[in-house]
Length: 270
Ligand code: SAH
Image 1 (cartoon, helix red, strand yellow):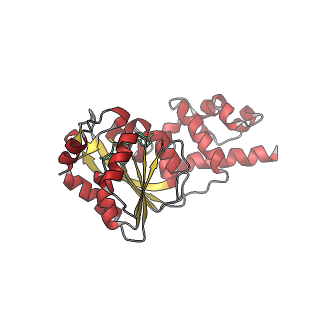
Image 2 (cartoon, helix red, strand yellow):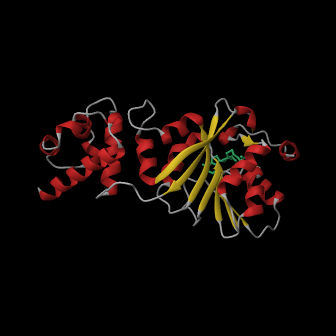
Image 3 (tube, helix red, strand yellow):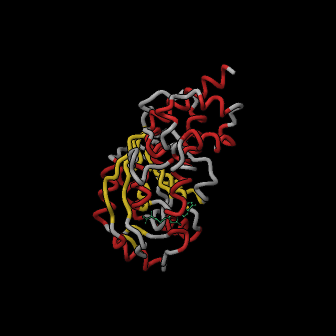
């Protein structure tokens, strides 16, 4: 069925990260995980030929699709004519103000996974069921002291409980991508640790992971163009040695927050 739709519209995919999900079992599981009701407003980023859209429309109250490719926007309109539940926004997801939604369900364009994810972390929503490249998904959920632990891991943990719920082979897509994929479940929640100044904390995390193998003492001083703390060297020297002599990759999110909070307090006193 889904293959037929590709043929009907003569769509090949390939450009704009177009790898359409054609495995019906996986499409159905993704929608099931979203646990949709008529009260839900779902955002889908990159609607493609509408395989996921079709299933979202069956369950949700409203589906808002953002799609960049004008040919695919036409396909979506053609496939779901006059469907009152559907809104298609023809735009680059990175360039629009996102509409209000409470769930986001999508097979994302992988080359912009990172900016899309950071943009989503600025929104207020209840649940995300998102397809990523497998390696990216691994980095999202990575824990401290592992190779994959990164700025992305700390940002993800700060914003949500995230878990990899499915690992997907290239054969589930047409055309098949070169990489494996994974579906990540994202449940936003308040951070499980105190952060006095979120912007400062996130900048400190960025500075720390810019030089992930350096001791935090050095990466903070080097990354002070992001932090803009006067007399940073003096402040860093007052921080507890057991934290500041570790590398970012060996610090738990709450320890990084602790350092950020301490710098903020000292900075405000000076
Ligand atoms: N969800 C569909 C398509 C996934 S492929 C399916 O599973 O079949 C990724 C989709 O994202 C493509 O339709 C592509 O055109 C779209 N896309 C790529 N870059 C985009 C961007 N910057 N903004 C919005 N959509 C984009």
